[in-house]
Length: 161
Image 1 (cartoon, rainbow, N blue to C red):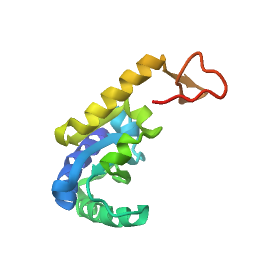
Image 2 (cartoon, rainbow, N blue to C red):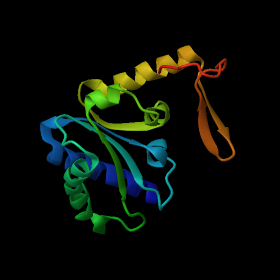
Image 3 (cartoon, rainbow, N blue to C red):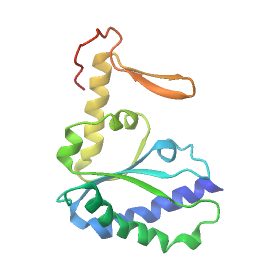
């Protein structure tokens, strides 16, 4: 039952984000357990929001995103099994293109909800190809996943992804 409520939350989230960010919105994606389709009732909703002309600084960006959270809070009566707690990462396009370890986990486990011009999808395809060129592997050990970016890595070597 709670998985359907996460899907409802995502359906409500997209128009709320579009209303706040308007034509500045580039991409919206969910990752983590909700993106993988394996949430628990207490899971948060990990989001990547890519937009143009964002305010500088994390606090200003979060203040702008608070309007989205308020809109979602107005829908709280529709949820009985979950509390749709949003955990956004908010970036501009050039910040995405600079790369982040965060994107490694999105290569396999992401649900893209909105993607103007396929910006995020194209970025993740390029990243996936680069990881394949390196022979990178995602390994599960000790209850967690980690990446081996290059099997023949030598200490001090710089790996560009």
